Image 1 (cartoon, rainbow, N blue to C red):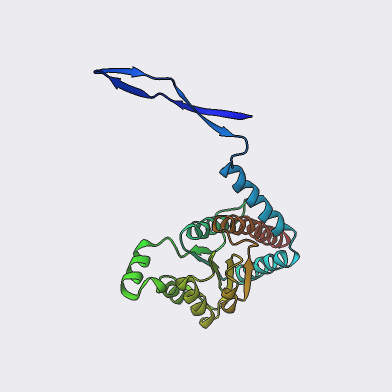
Image 2 (tube, rainbow, N blue to C red):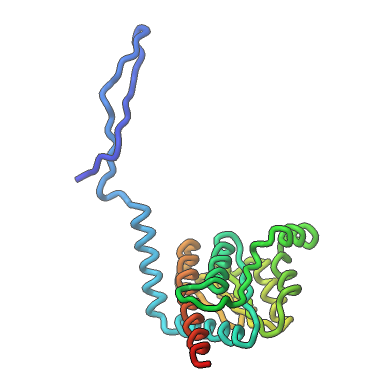
Length: 227
């Protein structure tokens, strides 16, 4: 069985006259691979693997606890990433400063991916590798948390920022994929998505990021209700 998805009309010129020929039908066999369905299936498989991984969930809870402790102490969360991970950094920061699900006070979180003047000045004067490390040096304080998102775990500007954060006494947290475990050398907490496929790694990062935001919000709101 096959599905017709479109048709094209071909023409031919003969003795100065243009004739319309028989329409050609384009078909997609039921056995052809559907890239959208394939991506959804791959994502679902990876998410189910993450959900059943007790060690991964324990790491995620530990990261949430570290951020909660920092916020309770009056410290802040700094977040970094490149490309799609930069977007995820901004997304997570917005959930913390604004709200995730509940009405509550804003908490301190900054994505270091948004200040184009700082990024371009630092990149121009010191090199792209320093765009986050320099901001950590200027904005980070002992007791803050640096959350670094890197699907590969090898981005030089991410690793430089993690090293600078450790020098300054920040808690260092990494999110990466299955090929980036070496990033753990610079992290107090390392969450490894159970896949090496970049788009799926980013989806798992954001899904777990949302779960962490939920845990932070519940813990902080519970404390406020007890006061």
